[in-house]
Length: 340
Image 1 (cartoon, rainbow, N blue to C red):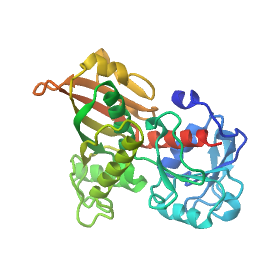
Image 2 (spheres, rainbow, N blue to C red):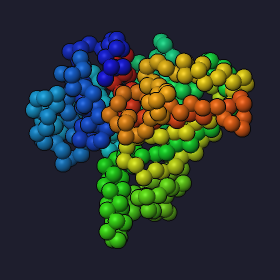
Image 3 (cartoon, one colour):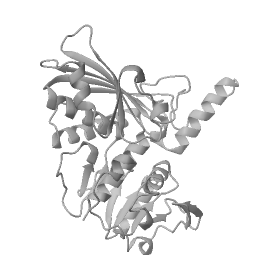
Image 4 (cartoon, rainbow, N blue to C red):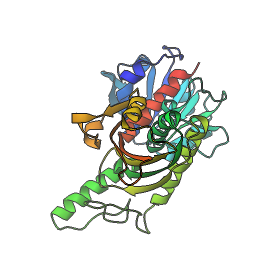
């Protein structure tokens, strides 16, 4: 929360904010970050599905009732966070509330008013037109954009390659349950559920899902490419990297192996110096490179393992990790803080 709390807030602290889908994985991250935040008292919970409406829950240490997803619940909200199923986002779009929409589901991405947002990777003073739908960028794209932007400003990048290891939680709670059941099933020699991945993910790495998977891994890879190209175009103008997405058997957190070739290699010390500023937690020396276990629930991104390429004097490797859900939630709240 330190990075969020250090940012100035333009939005009126008494403004009413609505969160659609507060029981989803992303919704819970928004709720957690808003507890104790200056905008937190104005957060209203709205169901992402019909089964959630009327549920008694907790927000900021106080009892809270989850409201129904209808025009009445949305009409007074200055900002509406969309964190539920894609169908709930489409329903909100149909209801056309007057408040600013911040979409964490990607369901509004193809709307004409949609604008991709990741304040952590945007240049100072960046803004989008009033009436835009703010679509929060992929956490992987945000992490790579931050890293390449700083390195490119230090010494022009010639080319780069990123291998991105995706966690199950990018596909929501059902994917987490499937990975857990697969793991237990393998250890007890039982059958494995394959509704999400249509392949064995437990104790495995997947370059693609099975043919019956509802969403192809290639779709997620292409989304990261689109988001990264947009973020780089509005910030550093660093060249677009080649990237490959691999599904990893982990519950939460992106891991990214990034290779960067410079026109003139600035050296490890200089690279670490430009990377070492919020929202980056730089790990050097005895601390060792970061991992998804240590980054869970942490703000920003962590970078470590910065080493020169032994076979290319102009290139370097580094290891990046980020809590995928927390990073997207942080950027969504940063967007809300910037609104007038």
